[in-house]
Each structure stands twice: as C-alpha cells, then as structure tokens.
Image: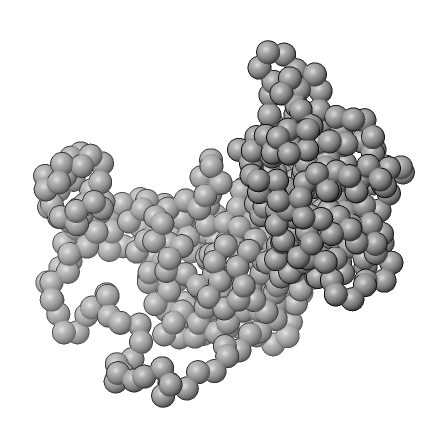
Length: 455
C-alpha cells in the first residue's frame, strides 16, 4: 500500500503544493496554505468515505421519519440546551473560558448517566487520571464508576471507543488530540479539523454520543477552523464571569432542538447546580423603587426571563458618552434620537450609561421600550411605579412594535408578582391576566404619558 503524502492546500483557491510557502503560487494569497494528506487511491482504504450506508434515491414522503430518542443527563438545565438530552450518534461541541466549569459540568453529567446504567467514558488530554479522580471527590462523586482515559493520540482513542462501546464519551479537549497521519502539532488547524472529522465519523457509525470540549480565543469565539462548528450537531457556549457564581450555557446551534436556549447554573462547593428561578439573578433587590430602573421580560429560546435594565443619565462635557453593557451600543444611540424627536426628552448634553443586570446579554429589540423608560426615569429623577414592567420594539417613527410571544412574557411577569405592564397594543391579551394591569400603547409618547399618570 502506498504511503500517504503530506501536501499543503490553499484555503482560498484549493490549490496544492508539495511544500509550505508563505504565498500561494496559484492565487497569490498569503498565509493560506495548510497541511493536509494526499492519499493514493486504494479500494481498501478511504478516509473520506460516506458516513451513511449506500441507499437508493427516495422521495421525502416515502422516507419513514421518527423522532430521535433522547436520554436525559440528570441536569435539567443542561437537558434544556441539548433539546431534551443526549442523542445517540450526536456530536456536541462545548466551549468557554478556562476555569469556567466545562469539565466540572461534563464530569457531573457523566456520573449521573453512569449511575443510571449507561456506559460512559471520559478522555482527558489536559489532566492525568489522578487529577480527574481528585476533582470527582471534591464534587462529592464518591464511588463513581465513570471510565477515564488519559490519552491524546487519536488512533488510540478511536480504538478505545470501539473496544468499550460507551453510550457517551467526552473528549477534553479536542485541541489536545493529534493524529499520527499529520506532522503538525496538536491544536493546529489541520489537527483539530482532522481529529474532529474522525471522531464525528466514529460517532455516526457506532451510535456513541461524543462531546468535544473546545478552547476559545481572546474574543470568546471557538478556537480552530470554522468547519469545526459546521460538522457537529450541537454547539454550546459557556458564559459568565469567573468572579461570579452564576454560569450560562447557551445553545448556538442544535440539530435536535431549539437554538438560543440557555441553561442557568450556580457554582457551588459541590459543582454546578441548576437554577430553578433564573429571573431572580437578573433582578436587583431594591427595598423601594429607584430612578433609572425598569424591568423587562426577554426571551432566551423558549424561556421568558425578567431582566432589570438600569440607566444613569448625568451631565456630560462637550462630547457626551454613550455606554451600554449587555445591550447594543448603536441601538442605544438610535433610541436616544427617537426619544428626543418623538417624546421631547433631550439627552444631547448628557452622559448616558445603560446596563443589563446580572451580566446577561440582550440582543432582541423588545428591550427598546424598557431602555427608553429607564433613561427618562433617571433623567427626571423619578422612579417607575413598584411592580412595573415594560417591553416592546421602538421604530424610528416612534411607533411601538409588538414583541414575539407576548402572552408568555406577561404570564411570567404576573407569576413573579409584577402588577403593572406597559406593552405594545398588539401584545395586549384578549383575556385579562389576574393581578396584572396592562396598558397597551401604540407610540412612545403614549408610553411616557402612561408612566407620568402612574407616578
């Protein structure tokens, strides 16, 4: 059998070269040649063989479709972002900052699955088996029967997967795994792409669920080639400040469930615990209403969350500052212009600071109305009424547009004891919600009038 040859392929034009060059000789692009394997054609060996068995062409109506069976991990918040649990043959990629709790959560999940009779495997490339065992004892997982393999060579990992046949295997982390077929160092683009592809094929062919732990860059994105996110079924991001006890796990991609779902965890001495009422994290506890504070209901996947929006308006210099934490800064500038033009509230010579409490990031435009009311409250020094919430998108013409799934937002607010709501007219419920007085508005100036009448 002919030996595989190492070549260098251009990521721009696809051209190849037998040796590495700084500039592609075909298209002239710089630093685009990456290491790959050029195999001789062989009927007995094909690294890029199809994952699926050969099948005949069929119409969609003739194909029998069944829901994928899900196995709960024993952690409700993790199951939420996974779409109900792990899926046979699924590949999950989870990334996050160092020390945020990725390995802790996965070790807890493996132990829970193992105690329910599933065969599990934890492959560690960054720690020794003794270190993993020490962590399990710190987490209170006494007598855990989770199998541990300290290995970074891909071929040995694949052989172990084939021999042990686990239901779920964790690879911690994919950046430490390397293949003998490539000469580049572990963590390089070629190694990460090749090892992830082999592990994905192993998962699809054997039915084992594989969880890949990935490193992140300084910007917070997953390190490695972008194709890594495309080839897996689910991509999860671990978010949160390492100085805070709360962590968020967010689903960015999920072929077996809804995207943008979040799971909320609290870091304790015994590991990560799910938070049953996450809205409490994002609400500051004020004994009495304070100026510049407005609560809104945002949606994270299928979960409504109450988040406090805080604004501080202070006299600025010739170049007033606009700063937002957890909200889009450009949208803040737009809302200040709409507030001035349509509601007569001028902040041209004022510094404006806006913050979403609890470190949550709000990307949906339904936060517009709450931001504007918080800014107005801070500027005038008058607090909003106790038990007040607001949500709705604001357009450049001053209209208040509806937010999706407004009924669920209002029911969540009523459940947590809020009594007054200012919402878009299209979100006003047909039947009254017990304990909640709803003021439906169509324009920004109407919302301001309602707030003034309630003060």
